[in-house]
Amino acid sequence: MAPPPRLQLLLASAAPVGLVLRRGPSRVVRVILWRRDRDEFEPGQWFRGRLFADRSDISPDGRHWIYFAMGGVRWAIAETRGTWIAIARVPLLSATALWGQGDTWAGGGFFTSNLSYWLEADRNTERLRDQSGLRRDPCPPKQSRMERDGWTPQGGGVFDKPIEGGWTLRRTGWRGGYELRRAGSSTIVRPSWEWAEWDRRRLVWTESGCLRTGVAGRDGLSEIRDIHDFNAD
Image 1 (cartoon, rainbow, N blue to C red):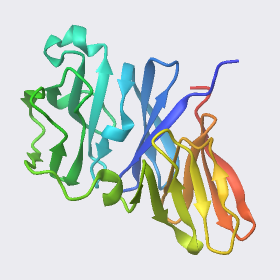
Image 2 (image 1 turned 135 degrees about the vertical axis):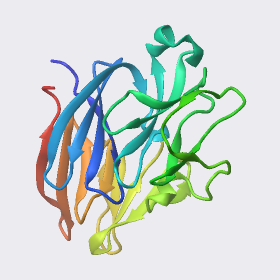
Image 3 (image 1 turned 120 degrees about the vertical axis):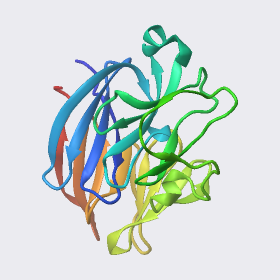
Image 4 (image 1 turned 180 degrees about the vertical axis):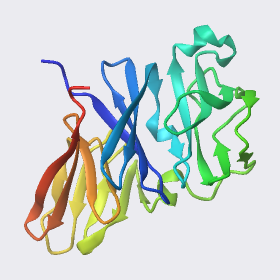
């Protein structure tokens, strides 16, 4: 039996749009558009290589995204030197702006508005083209992407985010795994969750190749259901 795909997501903050990065087999990723108001999914392009979700972002209006990639384009565009940063229209991979990186020490970025972005660049980052029409901010923002999205760093890759019902969603480290905490209640530990977020008054998470939702109540998680099963993709 094939192992389940790994799922990472990017959610637009001001539009009911999301991107699912479905990885599996290990060197293949598919980009999938998620229309969150209807929970409809539109399968997009396949990519042979790796997309770094933690170094990628989607604009607040859900129209553009930044991604950091490593893989096959090094043969088609030698100037990237194997790793690159791109800006594309959601949910496409075709770059309207492209920077070669050549390593993984730097690379990636996030949006500071619908029309502006910041890149995690260094002296190895080389602009190859830019027809995005967006503005690059020269100075790093005061907040990380997760802090911008309402998470508070606790150190060691641990982040907390308050959600409804007095609960706090905790990412327990850089390698994944989450907890739900509330004063006076038992902590709900979910090491199998790869990604979790608060989405328009509901908790959503990924595990075992599925995107799920549920309700955190006094007696733990209830009303759990699959929003979509990506195993058969």
